[in-house]
Length: 321
Length: 243
Image 1 (cartoon, each protein chain N blue to C red):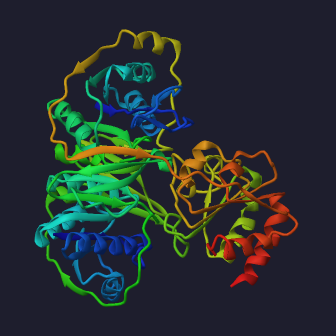
Image 2 (cartoon, helix red, strand yellow):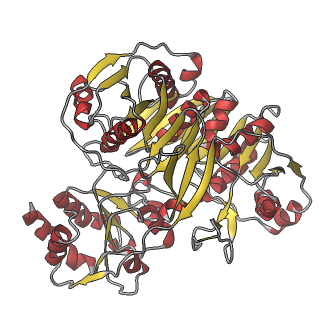
Image 3 (cartoon, rainbow over the protein chains, first blue to last red):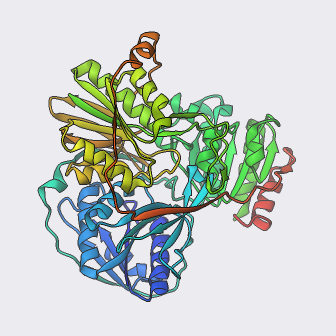
């Protein structure tokens, strides 16, 4: 039973969530007694594709050229579908990301496959094919059986840790031509931050709220994030007031994160914010109000004025290494 | 312009999530229009004001969802369709929506980027594929000029400007439009607007939900003295092992 794994690049390198998905897919293939193949779409450096072998992949298919890039979910889905047909995939694994929902739905629809997103564990395959998935924004889980011949699943961020096994994959170019339906949506401009850690991929996230009193004080948070090698996020009021861009808004209606360490500073912890962070492995809350509801969801807390605590914490973090 | 807005009927974002007898415990839970769907509906109302047309709101659900549908009518939808079935999974819901939409030639099908109960994020993409339309999600801005739509789509770490001709399906999120507060006239007229009940089509059960569980409860929060925040880093490294 063949497994196909889709991998995504952040523009310069293959994302950690994709490495996790490769390890996951390889495990699924081994449970089912089959082989795992990777499909990569777009111009991703050859050495990065070969290095997927380090996560257990032996064979990588690469579709490039024209509109075959990650900004085009329709063409990307077409490439995944072709690859799935070529290897006779019975399970297609995709790493959760902002654009992967549209890829997964098209792949599933075209392959007449049942599709389940936000899967958090390896499937149970002793009788049928069951997966556990996160629901209610991380506040609960459901166990779901997929009955269709082909199964499409997306893996929740940071739910499964990739393991480096060593090894090199062989890369094969899969030639594919576009159909008209794949070019109906045209990307005319891309505004993407560069040189910063991607919020959804980061192992450490530092987030700030209204407690910062204004965007001019954000440097305090950025300094700490830099010292820790963390990505930065913010609460909804902060992005609503345009202190920070919307793609940094963490919460129910913003970005959901699941890092190993989430540090919330000057955020009271409204239930809608908690919904975006409750899958984090460890939560630290720094707030001057000891009654802030966020402390109830935290593993570690500091009650104090962030303008005093943060500089000290940043100094300590710089010495850490 | 003929717009279809698909809405979910979901527990309020502050609801306590629990399960009894392997079903979601609705006791004391208030149900609302899915927040993302409400952005889609609000955008549809803006588009109707600018370009004219009609807004039909659709929900897949049993009779319990009708107050939620009436609220959507009060906000500004012209009529409503309820497909009389309890939603089983994304594939089931998408098949129901597509079966109603295929003969209606909508110019635009809007919905939220995902439901806030099952967080699938799949229905717009599945509906689009079943109707052979493009799907764009998650969009934060939508302007229509003639038959061309210009949108802003969120990507990880940024956004993209994208263009597409009508018709298409889109998943919406903030800040695409301001939520609308229904006024008294809207609430009164919603009572008499048409709400058509359609029986579901039969769909193969590719995905079947079994049991539900809750995450392990959090332990107590360990407090650290504000005068010595370095202690926090020591604990994170040696105890929590996350640094």
